Length: 149
Image 1: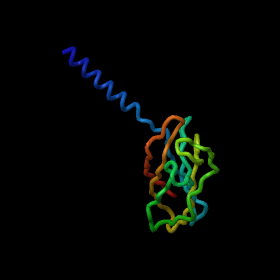
Image 2: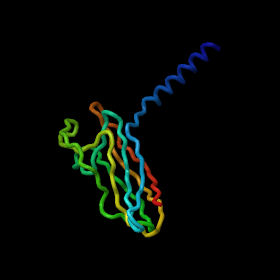
Image 3: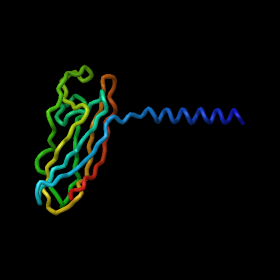
Image 4: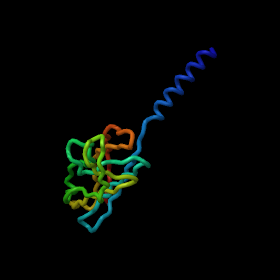
């Protein structure tokens, strides 16, 4: 009986250790602020763990997966222009053999919208890739839902 308990405990600790290895160095938060009755700005914030970074929306092909936003179509609002971002860090990365633009610590992307209704919920998803100086994680997609009141 003690052997079974010991083996079972070892298996559980091994499984728990495997799950502890999953890295999530980026967390997203969202908020909308109305500019007036018919316009609002969406703020999409990535908080990035120390020593990690995510890539700009403006990475050239042949490099890492760039950050992209996809907004679900709605009759309640329309997008005004493209999603904007602050000035990125630009650095040559041996992994990709090219200059790449990226963000560390945190970055806030902005998207203007025109409201066709007083309140709405803007839904969509963001795809991004996270790297540090040792590794890159597979690209990740995160869905979002942003209330505009």
